Length: 322
Image (cartoon, rainbow, N blue to C red; front, side):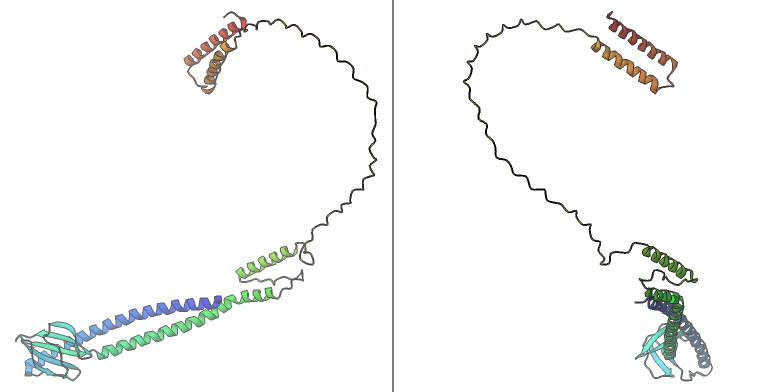
């Protein structure tokens, strides 16, 4: 699916959803207002009916609403409509059904103990509700069509530079090294894209052209000449010498007398083993002095004294005094 179509469908769906939600809220508020107006109308008619009944005992109605007089759960009188309504009736506002028709009811208890009920059909409110819903549906459809047309036109203007760039790229001739995309000044995104593509074309054409068949052949292997044929080998010559009789073997010499065995030399005493511990101690003390430059003076003097004793002992060992 093309980008232009995607944008148009997305924006149209969003606009239709927003308009539908707004229309729903408006319809609900209108219904609530109409129901409140109807309740106020019922209250006014109930006051007029009670005044007329107190004055002359009649229940006046113009046929747009019904009046019932109820006592002890039984209907005493009904005018304005022949529809059957349920009994008993509770005081206040309510919605009652008479067959498939709904009526809005207001019941009040009179001083005599009887109930006066005023009823108005809700057909008018239902028709008004249906008209409001139809208006909202038409508004949603109109908003969707207008938004789709607007987005389609706007995206066409926005995408026109990209379409020109695409058409120019399709018309490029790979064999022409000087051909490039036409320069674009606006919008900036298209200008940057055109400059990038031209730079890419220039770098691609600067590379070395491939072989005519598209495959580089490997270099020819050097010719190896066969070695020369070896010369004829002369036949071997056999030299025959006269065989002289062997000379008589000399008499074996007597075995030499065994040499006197000298005793092994006595081990030479050396001071290396005795110097090794002293050298190790002296190295440890030197490491302590180097690792602790801020050592207290008393501790430093003690270490130096131990090192002096080790030094004298080593000198004595070397001189043979110890």
